[in-house]
Image (cartoon, rainbow, N blue to C red; front, top):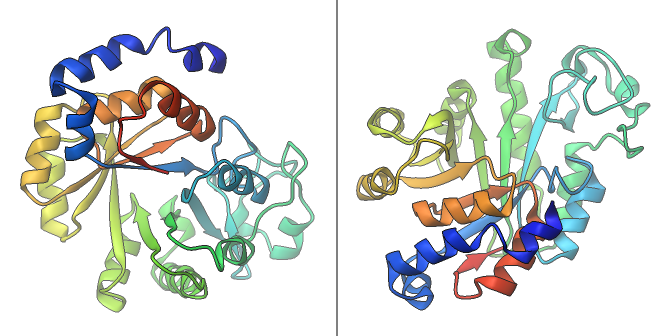
Length: 283
């Protein structure tokens, strides 16, 4: 599949549409920059949310990343997308209901250690010009009642502050507004992104403006170029997902996205460099 994508046989129609729309690739490059970032370290290329995955993306030239943070029963932060351990590890049960000693004894199904957030922070420490999205995974909501939620969000925020870096951008994201609201109230300088599992629309733009968050993560399917332009006019930065293929990345670029996650970061970078070098992509 990846070889076919890299060969470009299925992508040239999108590329042609791009060229017709913009006149030339150079014209597009002058008007749009896309911040590409490795989703969970490139979950379709490597073992998601492991230090191995993030290192492979870094070694491939990426400075943009996305990851997920959860908190164990004894208050330790882990890099894990699901609240259930079943899909990605050799364990069973709910991460939030287990102590760190139990979680540390597990391995991923590809035999990597379960990554703690402080370990990932140390990996990023000393690296400059980073773009990292830290997704607050506070669902299901009953696992994070108010007091626990506030403790969790504060720990995530403070762990990010330990990273020594220059020219970097750290963004706190969530589909659960509760955690973002805490950051608005207690750390108003924090950059926030509201994830809405819907296409970009008048309603999603209105939601962002109502809660005072000016970066939206919406689904690519159902989003139009016209709506992206409308969001930009309203002062909204647009991040689109999912990015499961090079074609998805090119579609997001065509739609006018400011930021694009990708599950295949290495394939995307190789394809764009080979076939669309005029695109202004920051990896």
